Length: 378
Image (cartoon, rainbow, N blue to C red; front, side, top):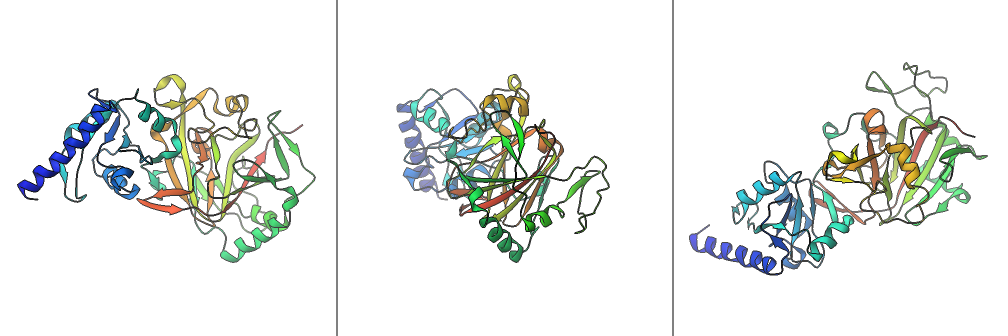
C-alpha cells in the first residue's frame, strides 16, 4: 500500500468516525462495546466481512451485529479491557488480509441507535459458530448421521400421519407422545397416544452416558445399559421450525425430566444457541430474562413462565458473553447430559438465516424429535 493510498484510507476512517462522534453514537469512554464506523450495511458490508474482522484479533469478540440500515456495526467483547485494547491496537490500522482500514470507537450506550441494536438481540450473532466438538460444554455430544436418509424420510412420513396431534404455536408447531408437559402445573400428564412404531424403534437405539463416554445399545429392545442410573426415555416431543421460527432459551425442568435429553434433527439444519447459567449477581453480562434474549414473548408465555424457569434455573441467569452456537446437521443426534443438561440453557433464535464459520446459510423447515424421561407425574 503506497503512502498516498494509506493517507486516503486514514482520511476515510477519520471522516467515518467523526460522523458518528458528531451524532454522539460513539464516546471516549473505553468499554466492551466497540463500533466499526466503516463496516455497515450502508457501506455495502456483509456479515462475512464483519466475521473476518471479528476473527482477526488475537482475542476475538464474543458477539457481533450488523444492523440493517445503520451506518455502523458492533463488536461485543468479554470485558472493557478487551474492548479498549482492540480499539487502541487496531483503530486506523490497515489490515492487508482484510483489505480494510478499520475505523473504531467505543459505543455510547445511551444513544438511541445503540440502545435499539442492543434491544434487538435477533440482529446479533455469536462469533463462535462451532462445528467442532472440542468447544462444546461438558456433557454435550453431537453425533452426525445418526439415522439414514431413508430412515429420515420414513420417520417424517409416519409422524405426519399423526398430524391431528400437532398444535400450532406462534413460534413453531408441537406434538407430544407418551406424556405432555403441563405448563400450568409444571408437571407431566400421561397421554393416551403412544409413540409411533418407528419412533419406538429409534428410542431403543438412543445412546446413553457411561463413565463420560457415549455408549450405543444394540438394536435389541432388551438391551440393558451398563450405567445402572440410566433410565430410558418415555416421552417424545416433536417441534417443527419453519424459517423465522424458534424456541426461547431454557433449561428443561430437572424436577420433571431425567438426566439425559436427546434431540434428533430431521429435515433442514440450523444453529442452536447455548449459554451457561451463573448467579445473577456474579456478572453484569447476565440475562435475567431466561426466556431468550433474542426471542419475543408469545403464546408460549405460560410455557416458559418465570415460575417454571425458577425451578429449572434455580435463580441463575444466562451469561450471554459465553454464548455459543452449534450447527445441527440433518439426521444428527444431540445428547445433553451433566453440565450441559443442568447448567446451560439451549434455544433457537427466531431468524431466517444462520451465520456458520463466516457463511450465511438460509434456513428451511426443520423437524426435531426430543426424547426425555419423565420422572414423576400426577
